Amino acid sequence: MATDFPAAIAELRGTLDSVRAVSDPAALRARIAELSEAASAPDLWDDPDAAQKVTSALSHAQAELERIEVIGGRIDDLEALVELATEEAADDPAAAADALAEAEAELVGLRKTLGDLEVRTLLSGEYDHREAVVTIRSGAGGVDAADFAEMLLRMYLRWAERHGYPTAVLDTSFAEEAGIKSATFEVKIPYAYGTLSVEAGTHRLVRISPFDNQGRRQTSFAAVEVIPLIEQTDHIEIPENEIRVDVFRSSGPGGQSVNTTDSAVRLTHIPTGIVVSMQNEKSQIQNRAAALRVLQSRLLLVRQAEENAAKKALAGDVKASWGDQMRSYVLQPYQMVKDLRTEHEVGNPAAVFDGDIDDFIEAGIRWRRQQQLAAATA
Image (tube, rainbow, N blue to C red; front, side, top):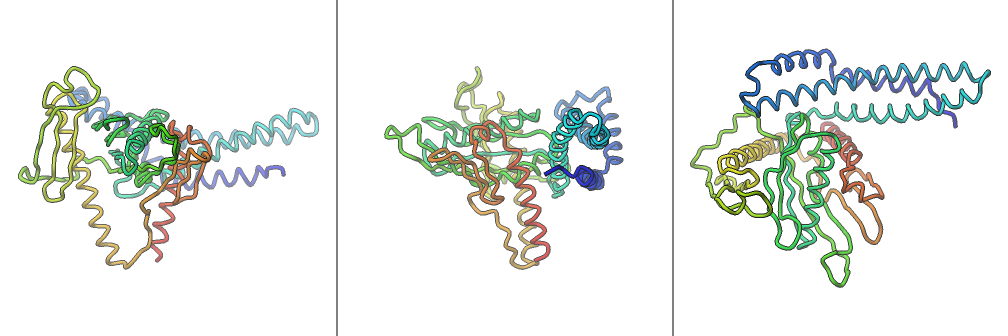
């Protein structure tokens, strides 16, 4: 069946108009001008952390505006290509067929690009624009679970690498035989929290265990936690008497400072029992600062959860639960990765573990939006 290009192009323009209405290119340009001025300040790099935030935000805003502006031109080019093919159909059928094939390929690409942009417009939560702190913990399943946790850590770091997103591993607790007990890392781009928060939950792996000498099938679990990175404007102040500080020697592979000094830091928030450990920085001061930042971020999420619980109590019982297990990775007896909330699935676990998770994230964001709309109308 031949593609109805006029209808398809009209649909693309309608979607682009919706994206523009939410993204507000004029506001983006104003934001870029503001950030460009800040980035040109002579004392910018006196504070490297603040400078990195400014340059990262500027790069992200410029890329977002460019995507919106470029795609409009691509739609115009597609329309011109289809018109050319129509004109050539009578005189040069072969050339017309080639042009239409090229138009088909471009239509597929445009739909994918616009779909990605449309998903961004769904990230409108209070903290969605924040950078993210991700923690992965091994669960039930012994050494297989620890190995699975390390596979997930690599998966997310590869995903970030594919997109050119800067990351920083803050803490890694290695398991005795293989894998990790837990790991915490930052994803340092705007909207990282809104994007990755749909990955939070329990992940399940089914495979023939490489650690079982009898070659039996093993099911193991790992938990993924995603929290928004704290900002100076959040005012999450923690009294000193509410924090217990323990220092210890770092463990696992590393440089000269590992296992030689008490540089690792563990902070315990006494009222809530929240514990944060950091050991990947070289100095105790750096580890303490990183641990405090993550502790503040977790307390921010606790505060948000309390506020949401209060709102739900006022609204009544709203059934919109993520559930304990959100995704299964099956390597044996068949090959499949399936999200249990969105029903999205693929048959290539190797690609998924290599960071190819954009489709899962997009489906999760759309699913979450549907749940929010359903809750709002309940």
